[in-house]
Image 1 (cartoon, helix red, strand yellow):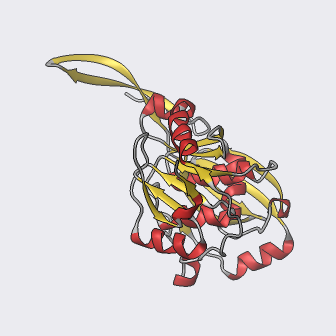
Image 2 (cartoon, one colour):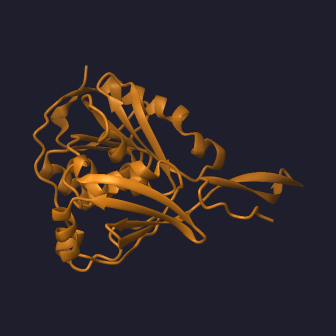
Length: 270
C-alpha cells in the first residue's frame, strides 16, 4: 500500500511485490509524485499543470517567460507558494500591463505530463513562433559529449524513481551549470528557464533527456538559447521551427553519435 500522499514533496514510497528470476519478494519502491500545480496571476487562475513539487518558484518564472505572460523576470514581482488539500497554488504578482494582456487571451489550460498545447483557445495561441536568434556562439562537439556524460550524476530523482525528465544548462566548455527535474519534460525546461533568468548567464546550451517536440524548441529559442541537444528524436515541426528561428537542434545524442537536424554550422568538429 502506498504512503499517504504529501503534496509538497517530489517522491513517495510504496510496498510492492517484485518478481525477479523466478522468485517473489516484498520490497519498497520509490515513486515520483505528480502534483496538480495551479498558476495564478494577480488572483486569476490561468493554468493547472501536473508537475514535480520542487523548484516551484523557478517553474513559475520559467512558465511565465516561456508562455509570454511576462517579457522579463523583473515583471514578475513575487511568487507565493500555497499548499492546499488537493494541490499547490503558485500565486504570481505580475506587472499590471502584462496582466491586462493576459486577460485578453485568458484560457483554461489542463496540463498533462505528455501534452504541451492543451487548452489553447486558438491556433495563434498554440503556435507561438520564437523570434530569430541573434546569438551565434559555436560549440565544440567535445563539450556536447562532456555535458551528456555529466548530466546523469545530477539526476537524483531519476536515479531514485526512473520516472523523471531533466533539462540541463551546459556551459560552452561542457561543464553542467544547472539541472532541473520534473515528471514532465516541458516543466523541467520551464524550471531551467526560470533558474537561468535569475542569474547572469554564460554562453551555453540546453540538454534535455526527452524527445525534442515543438514546445521544447519554442521554449529554448524564446529563452535566447541557440543549441538544444535531445537524447531522443525531434518532430518534423520542431525541426522546421528550429531551422526558421536559427536554433541548432541535435537529436539521438549519445557519447559516440548524434544527429544534427538544423543549423549545423554552430557545432565545431575536429
